[in-house]
Image (cartoon, rainbow, N blue to C red):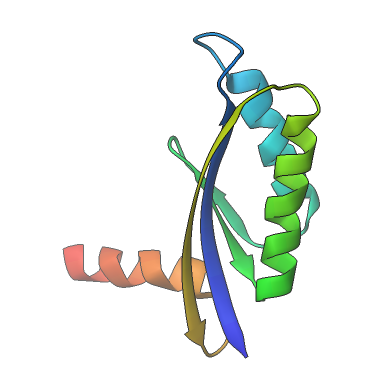
Length: 99
């Protein structure tokens, strides 16, 4: 099994300088998925199996496309064989080295 961590950033480009309303819609979709996630200032990381993560990415896109003529999205993927829980493990590993 491949564990996937995806970092997604998505927002409309036709809504002016503040896009937090639409970012919040995407983050709501991610939260509703039930997948482990970590919200950040430049994107949100989601962890799960490929199909589940890609469904969330698609839902984010479909949700925002309804209200927009142009969307910007970046998607970074880290796929690795093994179990889940890597989202928190990656952070803990770095924190341990900083201590």
